[in-house]
Structure formats: C-alpha cells, structure tokens
Length: 203
Length: 211
Image (cartoon, rainbow over all chains, first blue to last red; front, side, top):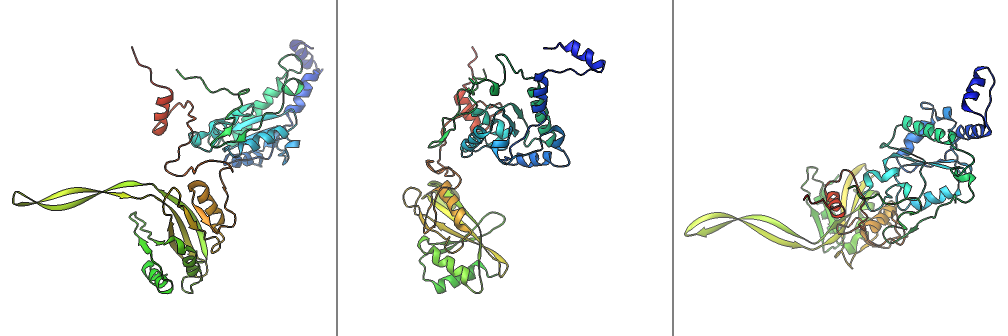
C-alpha cells in the first residue's frame, strides 16, 4: 500500500504510481453500462441524457444494454407499479455482480404523487438496495449525470479488502433479493425487511 | 350529422326498443348521450355502425362510471296557504337513486367524418347483476378498454373474446375505481399531508396532547 503523500510527490516528479485497487475501481467507474429500462416519464429524461445534447458517453455510461446479463447499472426511471415491482426485482437478480441501482425521480424513491394510491409501490428501496437517489419530477438530464458521477465517486472509494468491501467481493452477502408475489391487494411481502424498515414515528 | 333526436327516431323506427333515452348534460359542453337498454346493445351498435347515413365505424373511447346508491336532494318551490295568505315555501324533496354501473362509448365516423355520438349502457345494480353485452364484436377497438372497465369497475361483458384483468394482476380482489373500494390502510409518514391523507395521518400519528 502506497502512502498518499508519496504518491502525489512522485507524480509531481513525473512518476505515476498507482495501486491495484485504484486501477480496478477506475476501470469499473468509467465503464458503467446501464440497463435499457424505462418505466415512465423519467425514462424520457434518461434518453435525453444519453443523446448528443447531454452526452452521457463522457462518463462511460452510454452503452445501454438491452439484456440484464450485460448491464452493471439499473436506472429505475419512473413509477414502479405493484404489478411491475416483481419484474424489476427479477431483472435486478439477473444482472451480474458488481451491480448498482439508481432510483430516478420522486416515484422510484417514494411513490411520488401516487404514494397514497392503491397500485404504486412506495419506493423501490423496499426491495432493492439503492445506491443513488435522484429527487425531481422528472429530474433533468444534468441530475442523472450528477447521479452517475456520484456513483462513480462511490465506486472509486470502495475498498477491495476488509470487512466493508463491496458485495461482489464478499461471498457471504447474497447478490439476489427475494421476488415479491402478487397478493389480494398488495405485494407479499410488502417490503424486504432485510434491507428496508418502515420509518419511525416522526415525533 | 343528424341531431341526437333524429338518430333516436331512426333507431326506434328500425328496432323495437323498450328503452332509448336521451340523457341531458348540464356541463358547459352539453354533450348529450343515448341511453340504450342493456340487452339490445349489440343490435343498436351494429345499426349505428352500418347505417348509411351514420356509419359510426370508429369507437374511440370506452369508459366506466360508478353511480352508487345515493339520496338526491332537490329544492321545489311550493305555494302554501298560511292563515289565509298564499306564501311561497321552498321544500326539499329527497329521492333515493338506485346504484348502477354505466359504460360509455364514444363513436365517430371515419368515413363521413362526423361525431361523436355518445352511447351509454347501464347495469341493473352494482352487486350481482353487473352483466352487459360486449360491443367488441361491433367495434374491435373496444376490446382492451372493455377489459379495463371490467378490471377497474367490475362490469362483466358477455360476448367479450378475452375478458381478463388488464391493469391489475390476476388474483387481485376488488374493483379499485368503484367509489366504495377501500384500499388496505398502508399509510406511511408523509411530511405535508392534506385532505384524506391528513385524516389518515392524524389516525396513525395522533397529535400529542400538550400538558
């Protein structure tokens, strides 16, 4: 392990030194392939972000894959209805590790304007571990780009060894999450208690 | 296009119906509609589609309306003799309206470029007699929208080729667009509740009593 001070000193002298961890994270952070997966109007903003005007390619995330087997990042772009939620979880389970989730927009975070309705999931964080949440209705493409940059920062700071290493390097932590079943009025179970707990009373 | 009265007269000339009403509409658009007796829906539909002067060959929209049982209050002015003097007194008459489900079809003619003609069918009640004839054999475009009406209102369309739920999943219980549908109470904390949500919020997070 090289010290930060020595590293920057050497760089000033024209010698580039790095660690395997930095190199590995740098490679992963700059090639995040999202899943082509839009659920509602947020998907329109996601498309705009990937096109010429906003150019997501600058961050290495322009390769939208139509198959979960080839994708690293699931952008949950839009309203997750209760009918759609099991399919979202199943798609996530089909993605290979390492994989990340961005919850894009008010609906994916909390159900948004449909929160008190009968047919919309009150946030995808009930079933999936969300890495970055973008507020907005819908968020602008800049916000999505910011979320990808935030995710890149998160990836760059991951330690490859030790107890807080990422999930894909820890065989004890499962990478798949139980798919909820359709019940009579709601999904069963209504959330995954392993990753989500109902908020405590505000008072 | 002919007026609704003319259309009504022509249908009555060609088909012996026990019930064919023109329903008034009090909103500014004033779009009146034809209420057809439920059993003859397919015949009337076929007539409207094939009639040379109407040719309503395009059904653009099918939707449902839930009318629960309710008491309608109407004010009536009456002249009453009070101690030999005639006075005008307002009286409130309460009438009980029986509940029913209604399906509305919006019809246009692509060939003659006119429309819309609004067609309505009503079920007997909201509980057990919720059958209506499907108009999918007449207008193919009604198929998915009749499925949606079945899904959300519980109208059962006889003669529909594939009557299943379309928006909710199979195994869902209840018809969520009915006025009396109660979703399970899964309220969660919300920072700015209002209206019905405020009532729920008060129930789940009762305001603290200040000592």
